[in-house]
Length: 152
Image (cartoon, rainbow, N blue to C red; front, side, top):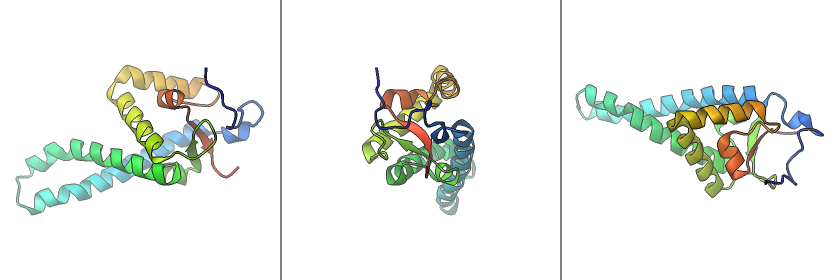
């Protein structure tokens, strides 16, 4: 059983959790666009060096996945939120209420990618974000992280 002594209680401090699920979804789309743009830029060298167009197109999913992983890990490590999360004024906190360190950000990113890779895990994660008081996904529940509105 996990105790949340230092994070806001959703029953007594609901403002910390208001609209977090919808903000999280919008942030995900913002981050998706940001990583797509970064991956596109990283694909340009393949074209410059004269490789046939089909070769870079085959590697775009891998480049995008790697770019997204590093982007998510680095942005969460540096401010406990990706750029999309920052734009939506939400952030991740650990069970002590602290911002995420690099190791926890790495684990959170790896857990998120694992959930995306295994469809049933992603469905369970989405359901738990919708149904739990703290709006936690599966990775959040395992790591004890919580998404909160920032600046309250």
